[in-house]
Amino acid sequence: MNFILDNLRYVLESMTTVISMKSKDGIILASDSQGTSLKVKTTIKKLFKISSHAGIGTSGDSSQIELFADELKRYFQNEIDLESGFRDQMYSILMNLHRIHNYNHSLLCGYNGARLFFAPVAIAAVKSKKGDSYLYRMGFGTMGKNNEVSPFLYKVNNDYVSIGSGAAYARLVIAQQDRLYSTINMKLSNLSTETIVGIAGYILNEVKQLDLETGGKTQVAIVNHDGFRELSHNEQTKCHQIMTDNLFSFLNEYFSANEKASKIIKHFFPYE
Image 1 (tube, rainbow, N blue to C red):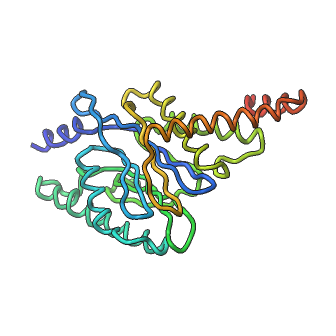
Image 2 (cartoon, rainbow, N blue to C red):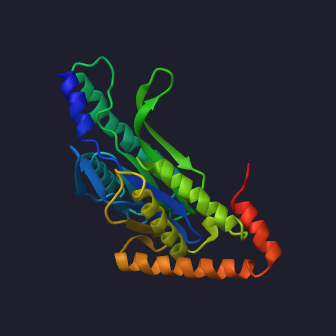
Image 3 (cartoon, rainbow, N blue to C red):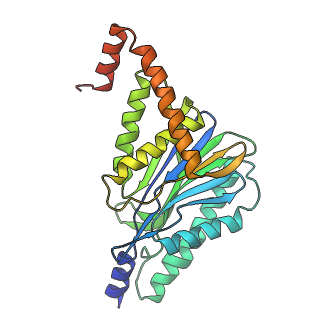
């Protein structure tokens, strides 16, 4: 019976690619929309508004994702005042879900310790009322030398983060974009929201060519001082045009001098 349950959980697992990038004005969440169940490709939602100024991008089984998002919405109905309040409340929710869906379920199935039945992974983008925007990565996994099953929650201090089956590919493309803009003395997190949305869309499209579990239309949401807002396909297209136009202007300025152009190319294609 335990073997059947473990394998049923495995075949229902759906993978994805979710990225989050900081901009000058806020945080961008982006994901694909493809779900996979028993090798059948479906369309699922992976970005969710959980309060007026907070959203999550999620990876995992679609039914668990929906349950997870609904639970967060239930507890984060009001605007978040402080980061510490968000962190404490989020960890409390994670612990409660872990107790119900992992620990108690494992006991009912006859296991001695907790097994990982409930395992969505998420990126939370939050703009608190009293503070800046911030990112957290959270989920459920195994930790330590004893592989103890536990929820986890930690702050992302980098300017970007990725999760899901295509996460490694996404990090590679983001690193290349980071290097490209650094050659012209610009930092990704200092770029406009429109430019970062354009870059995020480009990154997802690149990952779709490499990861079979990433596909479908790209979903994008912004979390800033105006709150959480999802972007339409037309808005994403406009942002991509803004990104390419701005990049052309930047590069055209720097490539006007041969010496500058040489330094840029060497920086963009380092030997070591």
